[in-house]
Image 1 (cartoon, rainbow, N blue to C red):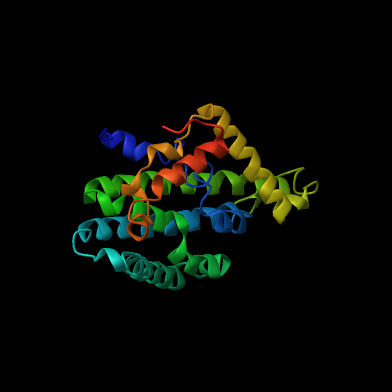
Image 2: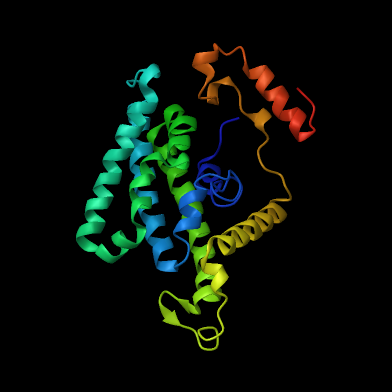
Length: 237
């Protein structure tokens, strides 16, 4: 059934949040969420690249040869990452330095490549634009909430501004990897509670959305779905 424009726009915020539901892009999520300002910067950069790449890939979806689509996607994404890197280096150098290698690694971010393969490659430019906006908002909000919690509790500040009492009684562990995983797990549990676990099952996806469909000749999908449902304790349909 065809999705409505509103559904495409909003699904990335909670229902199919790329970080908390699809569990993609966890490396930059954990790395840059020690400060809220860094999280906002990464979210904006990510959203810019996702929007631009989704639109371009959608426009070229009937031109890009199927056998080289992934290298083409990476080339397109890398071009927009280079643009945002140069802009940040010129106008927001401190943020550019703070994000470091994770800014360049947007090129191979699973979320962007995933949306290119699963959505932009199969939909028109406007729908791809809405999908990118929704996923970008979901990603940015997740980073912002995680970073705010970790910075407030771990550093006793927010956007660099000291918070009375907490500044002298902070929990330094929250700025380290264990604190990041703890907050990440708590937010995932919260989203799962809100959605009551009603996230998309793997059976909703078929050969048409599988990146390996071309190589397996569409003969292995039934076995893949069966195996996945067996692990989930579901029935094969």
